[in-house]
Image 1 (cartoon, rainbow, N blue to C red):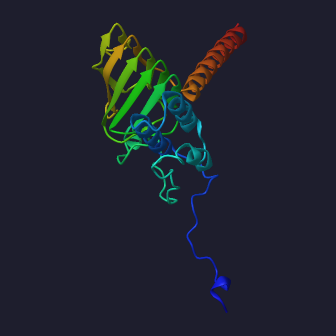
Image 2: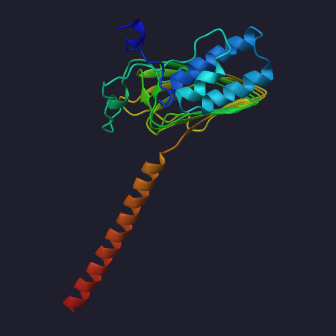
Image 3: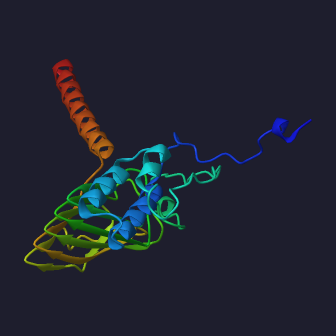
Length: 246
């Protein structure tokens, strides 16, 4: 039997259809930023590829963006069978430790979002130049009891959304721009995370506001509706009792 008949025992490469994570997109964005700094990409190429990186959903979409740059494209990580923390509604269940899902984001003539079920790292850095970004912590887990979001907005805008109960400390500086936080004096719940917003805005703005999730708003709406029905039924029962007592 010749060597040609031997089976191919090489390890398989990344699976193109496997879903990419925020961390994978950030790794590609970092390679692109290096390429811009080294003169390998011009600004137009950088902006086009960066936008594609943050829109990518799979490894197959990420790989071509760095194929001609001196760095390996994002490789598929090993599959983990460790269960994610279970959110039982308490703040303790949402402070999970470890590393964050994503440690930063850049919007240059474009935009980014961090929202849904993701893990906020101890420090998240974001930059917007003639673009915008949204950091939504309403459904997020937290790597630490105290976390920091460093925001730099230059002729752009960044919005931080926190759920009720989270303590917020704003330490940003506005230069012909501003840091807006309408609920500055609202105390945090016992055991809730503390979120520090730092950085600066130059001809731009950083906004911080509290919002309920859509599911929570719907739940409260349903509770109010049920309360109205209960009160209406109680009034009707009282009227029936009065009529029967005559």
